[in-house]
Length: 126
Image (cartoon, rainbow, N blue to C red; front, side, top):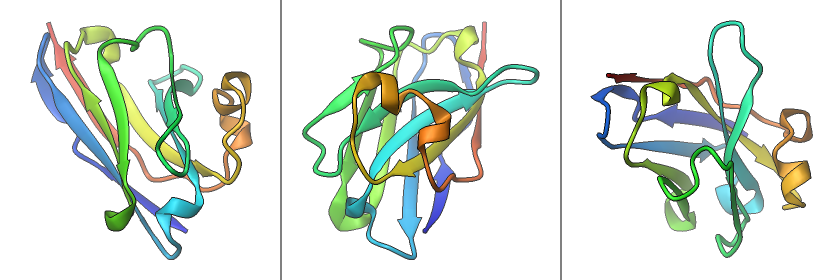
């Protein structure tokens, strides 16, 4: 499975971006997908996750109410709509696959995921 994350960029505080995670090599709908972010010298941080069918989602407390994860299995793509962006959201954002959609404690751990995309930079200016 290859994952391609895109949609990052530079946006002002309060603005919006939509990230995409496109899967190839295998059908995206076979996997749950998680979004993580990581800045220089920081650990990879959980952002959101979605089940294979899209019916279940989890969010980190820091993004709840501002970010929305969704998926279009016909397009093998998962989206992360990010609204009301803050400077502290500045990071490289990664998507990753996991076969089983587990508990929040499981889905929030980077080590529980298999394939990872290359990351897309999000920069929020104040």
